[in-house]
Amino acid sequence: IHLVRMATHMEEVRGASARVGPPILIVAAAVALLTKAFFDGVNSQREMQSALVATGGYAGQTRGTMELLAEGIEKSGRVTIGTSKEIVTQLVASGQIGARSITPITQMVESFARTTGKEVSKIAPELIRLFADPAKGAEQLTRTMHLLSAVELEYINHLVRIGDLEGARIALAERVKDQLDKNAIQMGLLGQI
Image (cartoon, rainbow, N blue to C red; front, side, top):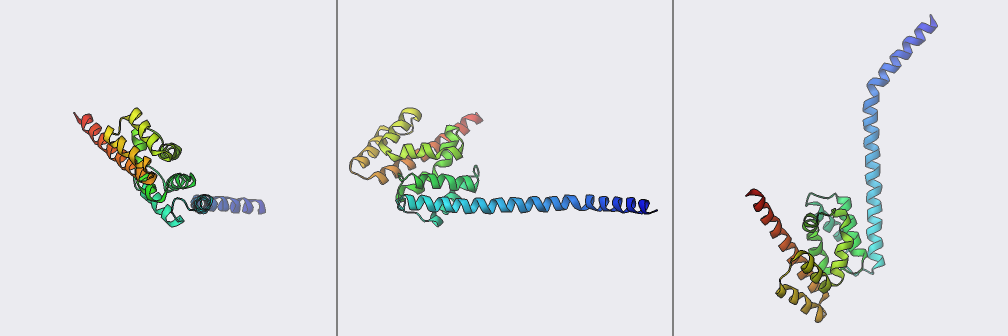
């Protein structure tokens, strides 16, 4: 009789745990995801702060403005906030991108990635290389992608010659973004024909 009763209780417990199991698993998974997101956020903030300290604030950013730039990239819809923060952190950590030019450069990330077919998350090193020396970057983009006219290329070279590297970076970023967006619209129209 005791064995029958024990077997019956075990079946009841097994049945109850089967009914409670999936909700508990869902709650546990949610807690694990929230914990991971929290630690990713803390790590991201630490990396941003380290980039600012390592470059002596050359980019003229704070962690708060870096996060705003990252949100701007994220709004393109092609990249997560975590990846956006990584891009901004890499640009700042390079010590090559200054305060005035970082915003226009981050605004062209999505267009540049879309046109080149590269993953947004892997594009920061290439942007750093292109914008560290805007004259060379402009020449490379003109040679490989035909994005700048001779007049635009000369203007960027002129800014570099007079020592306005930030102005040259801004001019390059704005012209490249405008041309990439224009090309995307034209390709979209061609695709409809």
